[in-house]
Amino acid sequence: MENSALAQSTLKNPIRSTLVSHNVVVSGHRTSVRLEPEMWDGLREICRRERANMHHICTTVFLQKLEETSLTAAIRVFIMRYFRQASTEDGHNKAGHGYGLTLGLGMGASHGAPAAGVAASGGGGNAAALRKPLAGLTKTSFY
Image 1 (cartoon, rainbow, N blue to C red):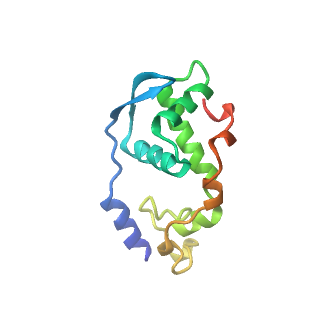
Image 2 (image 1 turned 135 degrees about the horizontal axis):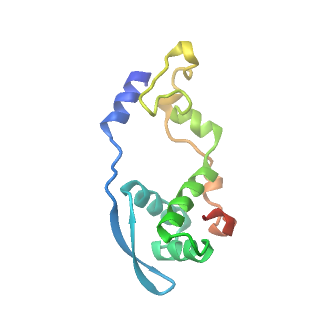
């Protein structure tokens, strides 16, 4: 996919920013959590990959977060760190990161654009890293 086509693809799927509330059970107590739709998507993906339900993941985050940190903030940090730990340079290259492509800023070949086909291959990442258990994320993982 050429740079302009990838930029157009990104623009067709704008970032959703409205917060969405869902009830979750944390340590046996029902509570409401407000997150962006993309964060809920990421949390559901983690649940799928870890073969755990949302309540278990949120309870794990709650038990490992700092006392002064809100559950919502801790969940956001958890999601970001989970996927960051799973990312690889190969995955970033395949996704077209580092060339302004995913931001609609395609720099073109004179600015070190990826080789033909690199941005088009999509996906990527280290599948083995995504299968690591939640226990691998220490208490310091959550702010």
